Length: 433
Image (cartoon, rainbow, N blue to C red; front, top):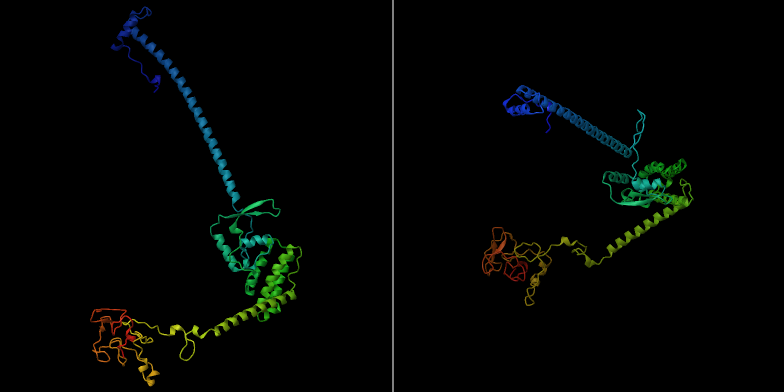
C-alpha cells in the first residue's frame, strides 16, 4: 500500500540513534563545513527534507495520473451504461410498438351514440362461406349453430391447420381447421322444418352484407322469404312441409345457377317446382303409410305359438304365468305340472273325479303333503296326510323348512321335503295327497 510522503514526520537527528551518522558527516572530507553535531544534524535534516520533497512530488504526480485514469474509466463506464440504457429504451420501444400492432386498434366514436342491436356472431364456417358467396346450409343461422360457435370461441384453440389458397391460386394462407371446418351437427336444408327456416331466415338476411351482396340481391332474398311466408300453401294440411322442401330446393338451385352465370329472380314462386314438392311429400307419406301397414299386418299374422295363450284364447304375456320351481323349502301357490318320478310310477292326476277336474287344486303342504285347507306356512301336524309316518321336516327360526332328522338333517335346498328325494320337489312327491 502506497503512503503519502507528506504524512511521514521528520526524524529527530539529534537523538542518540543518529550519532553514528553525525560522526560520519563530521569526519567526511566531502563535508568540510560540518564540524559539530548540530551542523551534522542540520545537514541530515536538510537531506531528508529534500528527499521527502522529491517523494512528495513523485507521489502527487502518480496520484494525479491515477485519478485521471480512474476518471477515464468512470467516463467509459458511464458511456457504456448510457449506451446500454439507450439500447434498452430502444428495444422497449420496439416491443411496445410490436405489441401495439397486435392489439385491436381503438377508433374514434361519438359520445351519446349507443348500440341498437347486438352484432351477429356467425359460425366460422358459415362466415367463410358467406364471405366467398358460396352456398351454406341454413342450419348455420339457427340458434343451435350460434350456440356452438360461441362455445368454440370460448374453448382452447386447436393445433390442427390447413392451407387455404387465394382466388388466383398464387398465395396460400395457413388457417386453423377449427375456424374453417363444417360442424358435425349440421342438417341439410331438406331436413329443416318450416319453423326452423323461420327461425334462421332473419340471421341469414343479416349475414348477406358479409359477402358484399348489393342491395338488389338482398331485396331479392328478403322478398323470397316474404312470399313464402304469405303463400296459400301454408294454410293447407302438410303445406309447411311442402314450403320447407321448396325453400331448400330453390335456395340451393339459385347458388348453383349463379356459379354457372345464370342467376334468376328467387322471389318469383315457381309453381311447377312447387307441384313437384307436393308430389314428393305425397310419395313420402304414401311410402310411410305402406310401411306402417306392413308392420301392423306382420304383427297380426304372427304364429300363435310365438305368444302364450290364455284359457280364454287370447295371447298373454309370459310374465303373467307363474314360474314353477322345484325347491322344496319354498311355498309356491301355483303348482307346476306333475312329472312322474319314473316310467314305473305314472301320474295320479286321473284319480280326481270329473267334478273336481274343472276346479282349481289347492297347493300341497310341503310338510304334511296334504291338500286340505289349512295354513301351509305354519303347518304343525304331527303326521303326514295319510297318517303313515311323521313329517321329516320342521320349521326353523327363520320360518323355513329344514330336515329335522335322518342323514339329511339341516337345510337342504334341492331335496323333497316329503321324502328327501332329489328327483322332484314336494309338489310332485308321490307320497303326497
